Length: 106
Image (cartoon, rainbow, N blue to C red; front, side, top):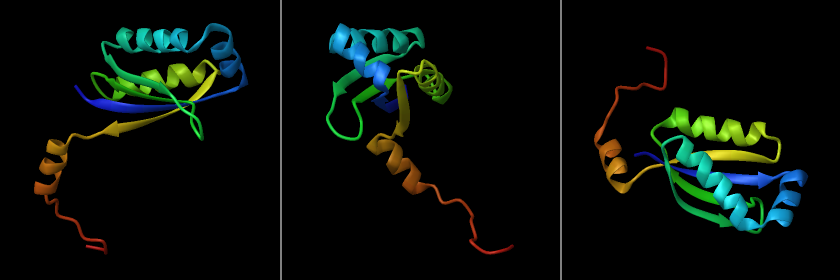
């Protein structure tokens, strides 16, 4: 199953919700959403800096990843950035592919 890195940054309302209910409640809510999409939560960590949460999830496809991102962002408590992750084997496969491409006009 494809893996994705989900990076979230809380808005003020989201930060207040974390302070009120705690981090484990946020992790549980996120895990439930991932399970609803037939995925699996691999890791969920809070962070200091530009982002507040880094999570790695397995999801069936990019549409499920987009649905997760849109749902969370649409809720207004956090903004989300999602990154598709590749295994070393997938990069090996990519390195063997050589599409015909010319940077100039054909």
